[in-house]
Length: 490
Image (cartoon, rainbow, N blue to C red; front, side, top):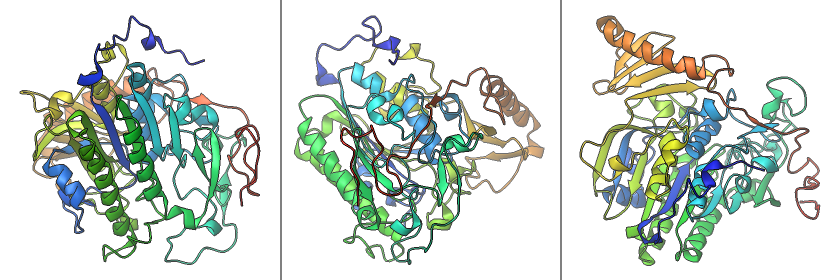
């Protein structure tokens, strides 16, 4: 049983009226580049997101993580990913490890505050039943538990729909239960099982190429339905699209719409999805009491058509293009229209921010790396973000930022991001004092979370299960004991 001390009555004091607590919608796009949407410089039309930015605030220095799994761990827990999910990269199907069931998530904080909670879309914090959203504070879940490329090549998960399906099983490596450190993170390559669509704790569909085209639409329809059904109570909707991760599967109605690429076509469908959500809130007159966040889980992969300009770098990197993400906050009447903030903010801030807005008491008693940035969002005088931000990639601390200054530790490269957002001019030789100050910040963090190793005083225990199994085996059989009734999916 999960131990949640903050659920005790002494920790949470519910507000007598829910009228003052906003609904919260967190829209998380997969692999969306910094300049893949109009408000951040895209070459395609994204009118709904552009309207969202005109009615809300752009967060210009908002940070995620370099890849999917750690980014989502930060978003859910309010902590640096290495603290709560110390894995070298991302999780794969049938991983033996995942986010510890004892970790306190934003869904659990809000649920304790009287909120209904749902997760729709990609999870990627572990696919075993112990790690899924319904074991982490969400009342319901509908989606694919990891990336849409983590399935068999012959079923469309390794190539775009305008390319022929690869023949043969492909080369696979790794695998749960093999005993080495890499194997515990799951099955890779040609060893990956069929993609499962999960509803709560049941596999309801085997995802092939035809189904991939439908998910942005199906997730959006689920989100709109959820808003309509829960309009009389405060709710937290986490809408985590598989779009625009490779392979690129926009719905047929959006294929070719951008005139550029399938990746950009899918970005236009994402824009449609955002419009559906915001229009529903307007129609139901819930917009004045709903905070909507739009963001990405990491920078876009340049080799797959993403655009991170004017930032340098790509997904997987701790250059700005790999970790700074396009982010918009929308709350009509509360977040100033047409505003923007250059304060340093991050995915680790969502838990304390949402918890504060939901009037959950003593959020400060949780051991978090994030901070409440609601003063920034609400435009309060003298509101500030982080003084220091640490750039981790897996176990490695690669860079640190304070104010305008960013130091790449291994390369001893210093950049003034206010003057050189593209990290083009190394000025370390001219600012030895700044380099020394940032190195001191780095050493403080290393004493807590370590560097190049997962063993450190501040690193928490991974969730772990014995004998992990795929949710769908290669022959289509759903994992025994996962569904109430075992079945075979074609």
